[in-house]
Length: 176
Image 1: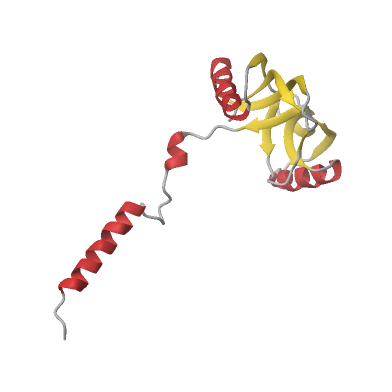
Image 2: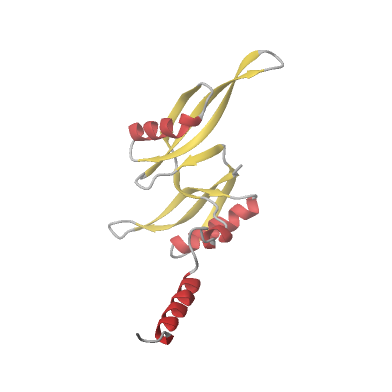
């Protein structure tokens, strides 16, 4: 299970009209600890922001899953109430879970959320859906997974080696 951390970063941003202003933005980072979250947000900000910045705050987030979409401009936070049965007490119990979904507007966010939650077999209610303060999300991708070659593909060096062998055999073949 992923652990998400909300990181508040303060830096100087240049507006469209060229004016500089101090901004404070929240980012969501997938990390294993507070130290890891700080390291990851610094690395991400160094590649995205020119100039100085400070990490003002890091806190564990209550978000359990994100639903990213390429064309989603904003992040919407949804509160979902799942109804389960407490077997010991024999009563219904409501558990709140929080999700983040990328969308352009509230209606699209609700549709995308319902589509993403279609796998849930227990009854649930969407208690709230609102525009979040999260500016961007940085999930964790290990270097091994980034560089891993799928089983159906071969490294380019191997392909070139086979091609060279085939062409050299054709050159050596006697002409008929």
